[in-house]
Image (cartoon, rainbow, N blue to C red; front, side):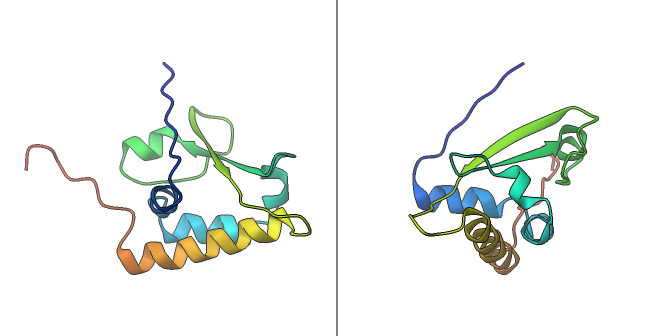
Length: 111
């Protein structure tokens, strides 16, 4: 099954990124392979484990299981380094996620 969603408003996009949680965002920002996740069009590609999302946690995929793919278009101007922009965006989002309590915990729908 394929489900596709797109967020165009910058404020909503930033909030959506924070939903990944401070731990995952920090892990991504410190990743030595971050440059490999950014394509020529300055899009950061992430892959999350489907099984982790179903269980209420958020974890990066190692590629051997079902995954959910995400793309984050980076705002990069001439002369700027896309990897450095991505690191800064992820680090800032990690701090915001921690301050605002993201990700929002999944609660039982029967509660």
